[in-house]
Image (cartoon, rainbow, N blue to C red; front, side, top):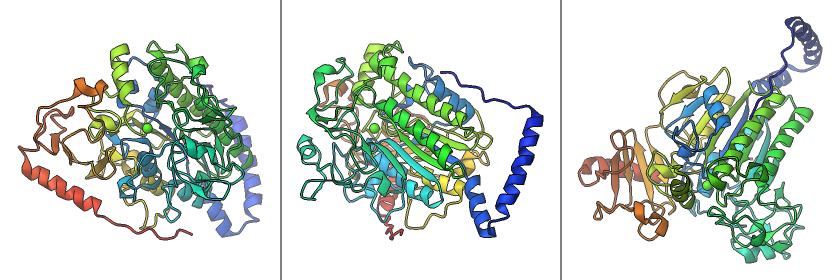
Length: 533
Ligand SMILES: [Ca+2]
């Protein structure tokens, strides 16, 4: 995708404009109090923040992370050329719901009463409770205009005709929704001025309808007719739920893109003096792989390859929109993924297209091995974050909240973001080192199966993957490794064994005990949130 060159005006015109601007500014500011000036001044100096969150995009799916990748990702690669590429960044969990909760709260999801269980359909309520400061609220409190577009999947509450809350997955609860009643716990109740998206996975779950604000503008009227959808090996994980007439499963990501572009256009029309925070959470590249018509055949790697091309296009298009608004320089762009690549996608792409979305790691989505949670992460902020830089510092997506708070001078209360560690100095090139000594990884089983990492050592509190069943799942049987069936935990030295093939749990009991004790200590941390308002 090409970028439009910004118009460069001759210097003399710039000088004239500058003088005029100074004169206008002077007469404007002279009518304001000092406090107002300082408030407006600091708000206008704060950078915009755009988080682009991919779904189930593996480390090996992005070309600048995997030179062997069969799919080109020129727009994401360009982000890396213009910013900092993290090689040891982790989603806080290995599946959608807990990772998203952690990203937006700076807190590990296993601390939740339900440990961040994955919602399906209209499951809820919102896991971000009202007494917890979220990233959206943090930016809103700073005077940002805040938008959330795309897949929410952290829970919200629909109501039936009697006004009873519905917090249940499956197709039947959808039939009980009273669309005249506002939804509770939508993103607009958690610090976002604007929300357009879906309650859960847009093309997987039981409600195939868009939510705007706290309403469903076009409610579903029919059961999904799968005969009208593409049929191929990657068209699975698509349940027979209730669909609205305007809900086109193959166009979801382009609709999200249009909404984010419209949010930015409106922002620059109506409140350009404010900074913005936009959280754009894509459906791509979660199964089913339904690329939009214009991307079919755009890769040589089948529908899933085409879907990755579409995802890359969307990244480029959002960058283009920033450029159109002359907002590129003052916007921090963060691109990352919520967990590793899906099992069927990974295994089939290896077989069908010699493409390894989990490369070079062991494991995939749901697993505690690196493939489950070590994800691509790129941060761009021209003139501030060193361009074309790479870091191997250990960071977790929970850390974004404290880091962005530091950069934007937000005062984080002590009762929030307890698992968030500020890495702004690393980001701004003031140090080469991260400051995260430990990181906890959450598998598919809530708080029961966790891993902890400290520098080269990684301890898993279970003898298996922590997610997928490699013995029973047919697609995974060939990857099952039974070399140490007696060990009920795992310990790896990632420095010499990044592929996690040599379990040292029985050979290094002291290290294992130390890591286990630290994991228990981190688990037992309790922080009581207080009312924010
Ligand atoms: Ca996901």
